[in-house]
Length: 108
Image (cartoon, rainbow, N blue to C red; front, top):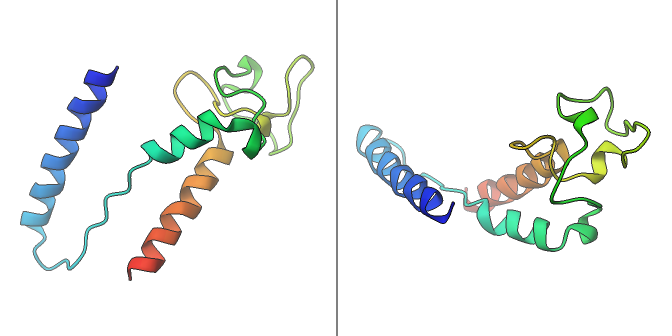
């Protein structure tokens, strides 16, 4: 997996360089690295209210009716990090959105 991430990051850097070359009228391009945030959220999940950062409840994997939705046998949806085997839950998206907003408002 580490090789895949390194390869992805290489492609991303190339894309950013090409983007800058094609849009020379832009003063600033901000690349937001989610890796450190994911590490903190996964390493300190309980601090952020996650009871499970390694798995997910299959009853929730195709979305849920409400933010506080809960089915028997699973913790409330908002207490999981993962929605399914690929996507983080909306709670993670909210944390990332706040971090991105902070970066954009402080750099502009």
